[in-house]
Image (tube, rainbow, N blue to C red; front, side):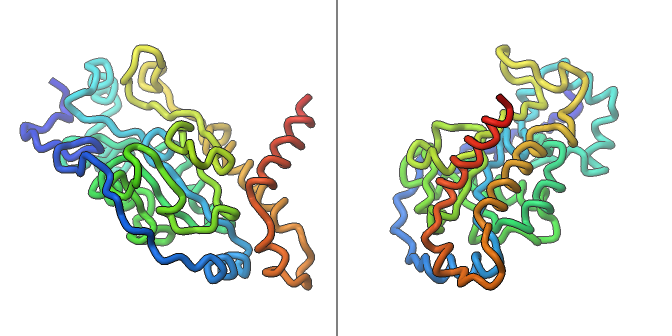
Length: 266
């Protein structure tokens, strides 16, 4: 058996029995777009919604780990990885691997964005992963971490839950279908699969490697975010910023940036 298995079977992973199976129909939160918009624009920031699973981390129930993965991690002294913070556990049942460059991504993006987390995992799981991503509490508070219990439609994420003006919000997620109501806000990131889970994909453990920090997906997305942020805040310092920027829409800027740089690649 895999060394990472726990004899207990109290699985509290993203889809455990301790989570709420159906998203609750919460009443709409009071919304004050101009106040939030003005605060962000004064700071020259936009708002970024981040997914967790396969975007910033890969989590797997230890009981589901392939034997080959167990042997590979054993050779790498995986238990020592946990002590050193390279791997993390949740309730002794989930093994969590941070995507390479995750901490640097948050540090760099935080100069341009305020953050929210939106995961289809449970609230306890989201809390644990946020503690790993942000141990000093620099980027996230409990009020901007959303889970499947906050969904108004099962397995569909909505910006109305995030309570931010859609004109200043970008989303980074590996799943397009969960953002069917906000496709123009989405920057799709390629799925991070460190552990071997599906036959159709070759995991990083099977390659005996890991995603590049310098040239990986988070670095690519950060570069795209920088371009969008720069294009959005394009005025001189003495311009009446709020009156101008409150009429701007980051979705239009995003489309323009994509069009511009796709042409440069031609």
